Image (cartoon, rainbow, N blue to C red; front, side):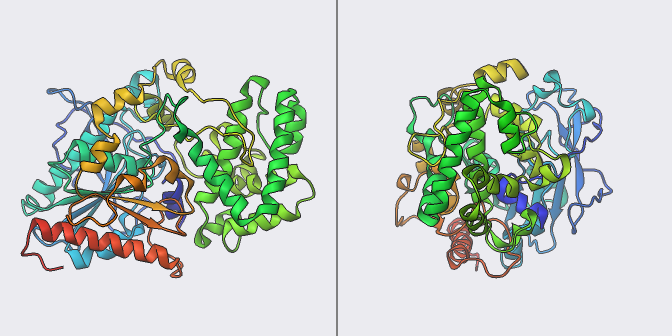
Length: 497
């Protein structure tokens, strides 16, 4: 259940460094003996000899990349459903996702690929996170990894029976963006994609982009709509935090909230933005079946809003959300790292994720506009931090779009992609917008926007453990399945789904 919870937020758990495999061809099959770990129940993971640098044409050095392949229900010519890995510190498993339930009906094979530099898929083992070795963490290499594994599956795993199998890639959050990029940039490999809550807007620089305010604006509005009195206390608490950091009162801040390192005066905007970010992440995790991770029974937002309402002071009101979401870190260390927004508590592998956000995925979760329940912040720009930490200058959105083509016009015109959003999820403010798509397309292959009113972040992808998911979420999952059926019937009229 913990890994599925992480699929809603960042898709990760525990870090581990694997030993690189040597210098064999990237097209070589995974090791003949699957390596079982504690992550996936069935089937176990395998290790794929993956190229460290796909731009090199000879003498390719490789590393061991984890994949999970399940051909239990596969029928020759049936689809391959592949989950694109993301920033998770542990590998996700196909049995944790809704498409696993569809496999018998579709005659589908299932696959999960772990993202390079995350989990056990470490190109240089324990030395993977030096700046010199991180340079192979590029979007081109990430996409080529998945293409290489699909090519291997078609030829080796299916004994050639998968040559004509349509491949549909699924991904959530950052993985949802990758699913979009794969479909757009490698259309010959990926027949379709399901991109859940994948950011494609608010890439830096965003100082003149109103989208940068969307995420925190949506979080604030949710509090105001569903718990206005509690929201007023949160607003007062953030005002006090702002006054403390503006005055340089680090001691008072440490006494008020359990930060490991109180912010310096010059860190004001980053601190206030990241405090608001914790509120956003809790909202993204607003489901009953993951509530026990916060020591909560019920919907996390409802419980925290009630606690906030009865908190004895505004700062105590802010602490209710922090203490719940950062429970793991506070319990373990007695404090939390505000600069990570408690990402270390929820399984984000921070170093490679920070690097790729500087290298090619430099989206910004947002600035806080005046008028929200949070403290307003100045425009965010990661350039200086990226240069100091990794000695790289982030590309602009214009440069990235020119190379990888995830602009609105291309997204509108790329067939067979489902863009799914949850009404409770504030990330929808920086994902593809509903206005980009036809309301009732007549072409079954047209890109589609689907929306579940009461779903959280990427919840449509995760399999239901509680059995009582909101009807809007159940409808979206069924809608996604039927849209994919339409794609496959359109491509091959003989299929009977």
